[in-house]
Image (cartoon, rainbow, N blue to C red):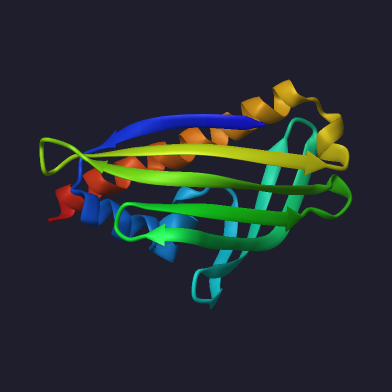
Length: 153
């Protein structure tokens, strides 16, 4: 599975970078995320529940940040085990581009992932659709978190 997209966020690059590295923000924006804890610098233990078609799975795994170029880019590598449901692993590159308007940032990402076990038997269309929905949900919540911050100020 491969996907890429970009989102215009109504916040300056520094604020977007800070939010992308805030564990509580990530936990609340990632659908099904039950836990994300720093294990050591740039390495995190993650637990999440995922429903893809008829398969419900609880994944436990590790997320690592690589090639960190603060405050504009990094690569995320992840791998997780979902018991009988199978496994998932992959990576994503994230890049922040300042815009002419200093209070806007273009967030660009590209991701690739592999799944195995029962998940792989579901078929690529179902998996791709679920992955796209999860990414869209994340970015909708992430983007709206900046609107909420502005309203509270």
